[in-house]
Amino acid sequence: MADPMRIRAQASGDKAVVRVLMSHEMETGQRKDASGKVIPAWYITDVTASLNGKVVLTAEWGPSVSKNPFLQFTIKGAKAGDKVSITWKDTKGDTRTDEATVS
Amino acid sequence: MRVIHLLAGLALAGAVAGAWAQKNPAEAGIEEYRAMLADGNPAELTEAKGEDLWKQKRGPKNASLETCDLGKGPGVVKGAFVELPRYFPDTGKVQDLETRLITCMERIQGFNGAEIMKTPWGKGEKVTVDALATYVAGQSRGMAIKVPQDQPMEREYYEVGKRIFFTRGGTHDFACATCHGQDGKRIRMQDLPNLTKNPGDNAGFPAWPAYRVSTGDVWTMQHRLNDCFRQQRFPEPNYGSDALTALSVYLGVNANGAKSTAPALKR
Image (cartoon, rainbow over all chains, first blue to last red):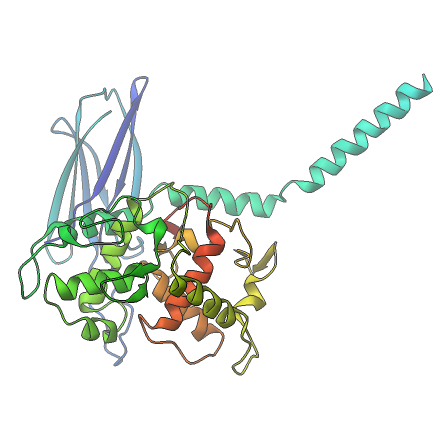
């Protein structure tokens, strides 16, 4: 079970800035361990963001994204009280969804 | 008229001198980069994990750490970090945050403390200690460091720590003081805090545990100090050894008054 994300969403005017910190190893599959064996790839491939259930952002990620990725984006028309939900899926098929309220 | 010209000239000279005293563009660039990173400090994830671990029933005795005494009474977390290391009458020792947490894990949860100390970095229950330390430190964010010196043993540890800090040795004839004994020094792009004076720099002692971007994980003070010795080509001190606690007391007392930024973000 993956660790929870930290999501902060702050409205200013007719926009809301969303900042997401995800907890993930993001192993590239290029590294080797102490005994010389390749560490299998394990990274987030798909990220989806929704505002009150409506998808507002999708992204396809690869192995070049850092460990514990930080994602920031702006949603037009989001108001305080709206629900922002973020979902990611990784190469192991593991997925995690977290939700935050725009403040 | 001539007087006015002279004054204007002086004012201009002053302005130029002011500009020189300001940071150069490279340094400003690094600071901007650091500010951007700080916005999403992954130490927050470790902090959240540590909070869960603190409240969870774990170990052979299936107990939570909520009765753990970090120096301010059982279960008091807020403000505990800024007063560590300190003397604990129940163990008869001066302990830092990590060793005290291990004492709690041993006494309350039934873990084998000696085993945890021997566990390699980033493995097993060592990870738990790191997360717990990050959580505890985060609960004192912004508070001023006030490492106590009331007990004779605490004062003794300070003196021993000071001795260790200034002891030169190893293949490079280094001491901690070689890099951390003067103001305004840096290695490559990394500013080096001067750790010998008070009030100390809050980039030093009050910043650890911290998330290190270069290694992608949280390091506690024990890990930081261990690596300082490794870099000096000294034999690496044992985790939780009195030597490291003594050094922490020295750094902590010197940092008294500085605001805690832990868990901070490091390059």
